Structure formats: structure tokens, C-alpha cells
Length: 195
Image (cartoon, rainbow, N blue to C red):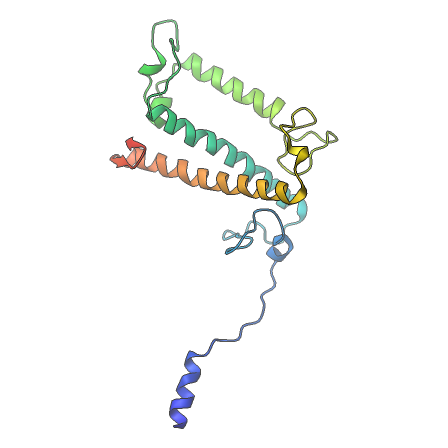
């Protein structure tokens, strides 16, 4: 009987102490959600201060927004939606340009330079935090000019919407990465079709 009681201890839950890490400082930030909490497998927040966290959050939001546009762009062009007209004066239509990564390499040089100039303009002049314009959080690019009803929401709704944006951006980053990998592998993906 003593052996039976002693062996049952092997199935009892182990008592562990609460680990204290630098991540505990960021456990209450937007985006630190169950079940993972503040998930940082690469240790980017080890010994980080609030300024470092804010910079990483800014980059995460920007990459998430770009990935959402990229993913929707992939889905839209693969569905056959194209701009009307020609992309250059030699008669190459938008419909002649392929989809995905291979399609981006088919864009004429002058068109690619225009895209690069437009993205540079957005990066340097529009999509940035401007101090003193009433921005409420990192990544708030309203800069006192745009509202779209944000100021009518209560604090709980604002936090919820910010968390939703982070999660959608994270999913889009994984989604566009998956589409790019599958495009190189070839084959077919549900909803998207042939790659």
C-alpha cells in the first residue's frame, strides 16, 4: 500500500514558482492576449524599456498594415480584378502583368520607380506619428487631420479595436508569407487557386 501511495505522487501537479521576467512589464499592453500573454520567443524585449517597446510596436503595426494590403492585393488580382487601361505607353495592359512575386518583376522600370516614389512619399510625409497633434498611442497616424469617428468610442472599445488591428496584422503577416512560399512551391491553395 505504501508503494501505491508513493507512486501516486508522480501524477500530482508539480509546484512551480512564478517566473519573473522583463516581459512582466509589458503583460498589460494591448496585444498581450491569452493564452500567450506577451509572446517574445526571440527575446527582443529582454531588458527593454518603454521606448524600445513602443518602437517595436510601431514597426509591428506598420508591417501588419502593409501585410493586410499585400494579402488583399494578392487575393484581388488572383480573382481577376485589374485596373483598366495600359501600364505603359507601349501598350502593356494591367491585365498582362502576372500575379504575385513574378508579376511584380514584370512591371516596367518606370512604373516600379513611380511606385517606389509614392511609397517613399507616404513613408516620409504621411504615415508617421507627428508629436503634439493629439495622437493617443503608438501607430496613431491621424495627426489631428483624420478621425473617422475614433473619438466617439469609449476607452474599452478603443482598446478592443486596437487589439483587433494587431491580431489582423499578425494574421496578415503570416498569410502573405504563406502565399509567397506557396507561390514558389507551386500547386493550388484553397480560395486563392493556382499559384
